[in-house]
Image (tube, rainbow, N blue to C red; front, side, top):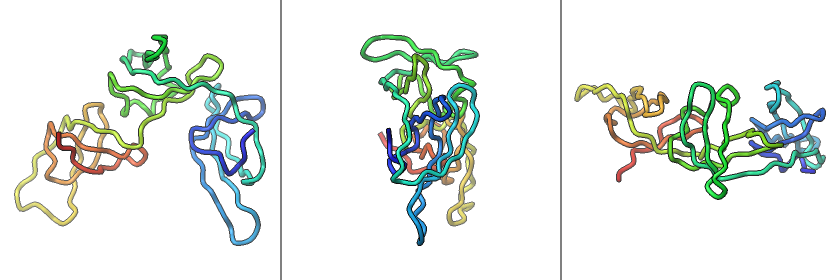
Length: 187
């Protein structure tokens, strides 16, 4: 059991006998009445979305899950392929279940994966990730309006707006929750 106030993004809850993963949580503390969490969950089995309002003191049933640190190997037409770093077990994750993660997975990197009843239900993406700029247009000197940005494409295909001085081949740090440029990374 888990209290409503302790629910976080990525938490697994059981609702109607099915596991749901929390994809969004907003904590609300109104002036009158008790605080509550507004939770949006996605069914692990069929992808159905469920929204709930849970008082922070109310306990709800959580799903027992395992987490493993796994190295991302590659993706084929249908699946992402991971290998557990400790046991060398192989995991296939259907791309269709986690299409929103495709731009953040980099071969060789280690990710924490969540497993429920033998099935991978979540891949935890770090809050910030370093990417190499694969495609970038050059800008003309003097074309520097304060705060001007341009779109670039990373090596994984993610499009990010960056300052005009960023060039192809450079490394940048990106906030994975907002897809926003954070800073240039120097080696």
